[in-house]
Each structure stands twice: as structure tokens, then as C-alpha cells.
Amino acid sequence: MLAFAKDITQNHPKTSKESENDELKQYMEYQRKLNHERLVHHSLEYAKNHLQLNIQNADGNQEKLDAYLPNAFPISHRFGDAEKIMLLLRKLANGHNTSNNWYRMNAYYHALVHDSMKRFVKIYNQLILDSPDQAKEYGVSEGVQIDSDDWVYLYFPDLDFHIGNDLGYSHYPFAKRNKAIEDKIEKSIQEGSSREEALKSVKDDYEMDDSTIKVLLGKPISTEDMELFYTSVENPIYEALTEVEDGRWGVMDGESLLDHSYYMGSHLKVWEWRKREEVEEEAESIMKELGKASPK
Image (cartoon, rainbow, N blue to C red; front, side, top):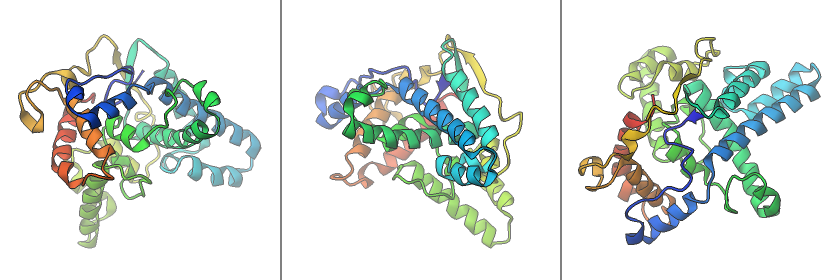
């Protein structure tokens, strides 16, 4: 199983504060209608099958295939050709379908999963509207559309691999982090640094890993970076997220980081009628702590 920032096998999450907060209750009811494992599975399968179809249809016409890749894989086409992306998708699918291990992804794999999910979710959400019975066969949700913005907030550790590119969604608070990094990189370049030097200058301050820097420099994925490191599912890699806290980082006494991430998610989801500034500082703080507690 692929290891995201949170356990995707937990499909019926609950928080202790639902009965006290209608917004949180509605948000958690939505969460319980999702099957995250199926969502990831079908996203990878769709990407893999359609890539194979386009390889076949191209019939050796590299120009035709090159025109397809940027649309299907906006970020990941930059570090791999069709053959390499197919290999990575197969490795992801195999890891995801293995139930006895957790497989940790680096920035290359996060970028490819993000590309794949973004495309599938768009298609699935339209299917919910046009053909709900057909959508039901996927087992992805109980008749509800997937909020891509919310899913990424909960299950991705960051979107650093997307720095310098339009996210397509609001993706707060990741977008704010990316903008801050972009501004520092641009300032460094204006002062005479190369892009690589500029990226390395912000790496430590923002705790960016080596694979992220490689993705942002457009370096092809190496054999080493293609490795999916794994650990047994018996290893409690998500334990820190469920530990009850003592009021630090904006978490109420008796709440866990996981509880609070759902609480913040409910706030962000209803931002249309509630100013997002009300939760900005708190959201950034909790995301930082979630990043420390999530599988590395």
C-alpha cells in the first residue's frame, strides 16, 4: 500500500468534536463517503491504461506521443518519457496493491500520483453527474464528487514538486508555501545565482528533500530514485498522528494532530462564507507538525 501523509485505508474517520460543530460534522460525513484506496487505485489504473492506449495509437510516431504526455502528465512528463512513466506507474500500482507493506514515495512519485489523480478525479466527478450508476461501480465514493483540493490537503505531505507551476486549484496552505519559496528563488536568481544554487539556498529552510530539488531542476529520474522504500504494515507509521496532544500548535487538550487536521480541513472547505484569514496561521502551524509526524 502506498504511504501518504495519512492512512488511506481508514475510510470511516471520526473526531471527538463532531457533535459540537455542524460544519465539522458535515465535513466528516463527507470524508466517510470516500474510499481512498479505491480512488488511488483507479487513478493509477486510468493513467496506466490510457498511456498504454496512446503508445499503441502513436504507433511509433514520437511527435504524436510527445504532444499527449504534457496534457496527461503536466509535471511528470518533464522527468520521464512514455516508457519511463509507464514503468513508474506499474511500480506504483504494484506497491499500492500489496497489502503487507507500506511503500514510501519521493517527490518524483508524488508528482506522478498527483498528475494521475487530478485527471481521474475530473473524469470521475463528471461521471457522478452524468452516469451515477456507472460511477458507483468504481467504489470510490458514495455518490459524492471528490474535492481534489481537500484530498490533496489531507493526504499529500506538500506540493513542493509543483513549485513554479500553476496548481489549478487553490490548494491552501500548500500554495502559500510554494509562493514563498518561489519568491525567494526568484530573488536569489536576480542577485546572480543559478536556479540550482537558488534552490539549494532554500532547501534547508523549507526542509525540502533531494528528490524535490531534482524534480524542480527537471532532472530525469535515476535508478536510485525509482526505488520505493517499504516497511511492514505492522510498523505503526501513523501512530504519531493519533496521539492525544496537550494543547500545543493550536490543538485542543484531548485532541490528536489527526483530529485537528480534519478540523482545519472543515474550515478550509467552507471558506466561501468564512474568511480564510481566520485559520491561516493555525493551518500553517498544524501542517508543519503533520509533516514532522508523517512517514518519511
